[in-house]
Structures are given as structure tokens and as C-alpha cells.
Image 1 (cartoon, rainbow, N blue to C red):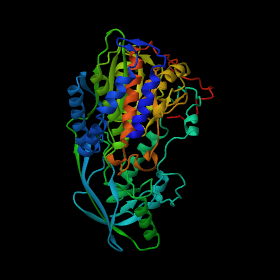
Image 2 (image 1 turned 90 degrees about the horizontal axis):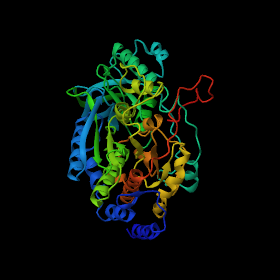
Image 3 (image 1 turned 180 degrees about the horizontal axis):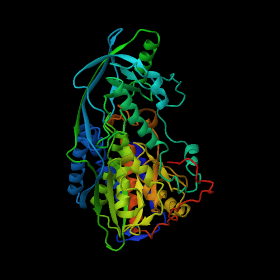
Length: 538
């Protein structure tokens, strides 16, 4: 607390000398003293985070917990006096939740295993027991090898990998060298601006694999966790209506999975008891984005936007990914409203759904309001994600000229250290000026580099100035991301307060500034373009 107080005192002393790019209805574009005071002395960011995580918990898209979060966040926005609070739906798929799940080895000795049910796979309808069959299946060619050998078996479908030495620190903050790497220019690649290679093919193979296992008489299957130290995730994306897997699926901790594989190879023939109690909900197959506004003083000036995805995976409580981002976005809204700051443009806050399944919520918003692309109307879910990113031409929508900037938070609980400009070089000097008041809080870098895989991507892809903040990694990548230990304990209160304060200031700056520079809207590349076949950065 003493360190934070010193940083704030230094910050407030420095702001008087900082030139400001724009004048708003209240004078300087970002009244930093008001924002820092409200965001420090009356902060609600940790209370928001605790309710999302400890009370509501993991928020798988369309799950009962996600529905609860949709209602609660709207209630808070209204309580704080925001306007136009509402939800916007888009077609998604089945709701799913797991009430409990367990995995035990019953032979050659009793042992409780660490396991997660794979999302959207069916339950076991009570405990089931079967011998393990090690049958790694990387592609369809493997099916012939196991035909006639899986009747009544619990099938281990991952190739067990050897444990690797942990050479990187489990917890870290960005060094100067790390921040410098964010300042590497990367050209926009129109063909690959927002795609995850091979996602569609992986889903197609998963459906064929599941059908093969069912036909062969397997009773369940299990995959190996991608991480050590008993971390599990439960990730699976077979959420579309009509695409539900036919067998219960589990993810086993890497250490437990390797043990089972070793026992199988030595002929000890382990047996497992699996149990999962899951429910589906098809009463509403739409997912919902939550939107709320702080109206500007000029109805013709358009709006700026901040967003974070509210959905998470079912394991853990979705704290770092992305309760942290949601809490900072909501707290920024509360700070601006409570401070009585007036801006020329409206400031809109968005809490996205379906991010973990392919940025589906933000894609739906862009399609409905900002710009469209000629995508097959029959494509849904991840297939639509893949098709959308490669379809040309881009046709601006009603809000394309109205949306002046979009800011995103989705890198965990770490302190903001700067901002990526997505190759928008003209905005660099503007952002350096906006960032200057927060240098004493550790936010110093305005990098020209690109970052992807989260909800600013589709805004950026259609020519909207859209940005993701640079954050300290902490233990996000090493431990908590998508895992069963993504809980409130891993959130850093001082970092979240700092992030909410900086986001609030950037929103006020953007809402009062002249229009931010825009990069050209992407066009279909020529086949001879050297970037055409390059792997996507996202």
C-alpha cells in the first residue's frame, strides 16, 4: 500500500506538466486526478472479481453460471447509473454444466485420479468401470490399428509425452527486453488477420474419432492434460446442437495419464471407475453479449468502446481468464460514472460471450454493427470463425464510421505495462502522450507490434482502431490459463486497480480526442502476395 501511495503521489505531481491532446466538456481530456482518486480510494474491482469467481464461478458459454453472470453484470451497470444496458444474442448452441465428476483407478491398486469432464460431452449415468486401452489417435489412419480391440474399454486417445524440465519461472513480470519486443512492426495480412489454423479440421476429425469409438463399443475416452503438476482444463468445442459427442470424455492429469500408459505397456492392465453428472440446456441456444453506455454530450460524435470476455472454461472459476478483464472493464465504467466526468463521445462497455470458442461474441457484434463479410449463412460456431476471417470484400456497416476506438483486456491479472498499436504507427505519439501520466505506475511501452487471439481481432480486421493492452504475465501462461486453479487467489489487487484506472483514462481520452488514425481496411490479397500463405499471427 505504501508503494502504491508513493506512485500515486508521483503520478499526480507529474500530470500538471503533461500536454494533453484534446479538450473535453470538463477541460483536459482525461482528468487523471479524479480517475486515480476514485479508482484507488473507492475501488470496487476486487469485489467485482470476487463475486464473479467465488460466487458465480466458471462461466462456460450458455451454462447456468454464465446466465447468472449475464443478469448480475447488467444489474451492476444499472446500479451505477449506466444507460442502454442490455444483452444482444447470437446463435451459439447447447448449454452444459457438470455437477460433479470423478476418476479412480481400481486395479492394479486403488488410486484417486485428477480429472475433468470434457465440456459438452455426455455424463456416465452413474459410475462406469472398464479396462484401459491405450490407443493414441492422431488421425483417421489410426482407426484400422484399433478396430475390434476397444469393446467395453476406456480408451486413452492421446500419445503420452515425456515430462519436460521446467526451465522458465512459474511467475514473472515483463522485463525491458520483453517490452521492447512488443515494438516490432508486423504488416497486416488480410488473408490471415483472424484465423486459427486447422481448428475446423480438428473438429471434423474429433467427430469421426468419436463415431469410431462408439461403433467399436468403447464406453468412454480420456485425453492427457497439456500441462504437468496435476493441472486439468476440460476444453472441448463440440457445442453445436446436433454435434454432441456420443461418449463421455475426460481429461486426466498428465502424471495420472502417464502412469496408466506405463501400466498398460507393462501388461498390468489398469481399470478405471469414471463418474460424471452433467446436464444439457437447449431452452435457449443463443449466447449473449452484455452492453452498457455512458452517454456522451454530442449525439453525433459516435462512440468508443472497451471490452473483455465474460465466458470461461468450466474448470476453475475463470478468474485470470477472464474475470480479471471483466472486473477492470466494469470498474472503469464505475470510475468514470462516479467521477462525474463528461465526454464528447459515448463510452460503451461490452462483456463478450463465446470468446473461448472462437471470439464468437465480438464477431457477432462486428457483423451486426460494424462491418460484414460474405460468409456462408449456414456456417456456425468455429466454422463461421474460420470462414469469416478469409471472406472478402469487407462492407462497412452503420457503426463503422461511428466507432472511434476499441480497447480490450484479456491477459490475466497482471499490471498494464503498455499497449499494442496493431501496426497503427500514426497512433503511437498520441498513445505515448496518453500513457505518460502512468509511467510512474509501470505503464511505459507503446508498441507497434500485433497481438491476437482475443476480442479486438475482428474490430482490427475491418479497419477499426482496436487495441489490446500489454500486461505482466504473472503465472497466467504457466499455471492458471484455462486450468482448474484459475481462482481468485491468483488475482493481484494492486495490478487490477492500476489496470482499471489506465483503461478509464484511455477511454476518456479517446472519447474526447479528434478521430484516431485508422489503417486501411484490408482487401483480398493477390495469390502472388508474399504474405498470402503465411501462417496467421492470431
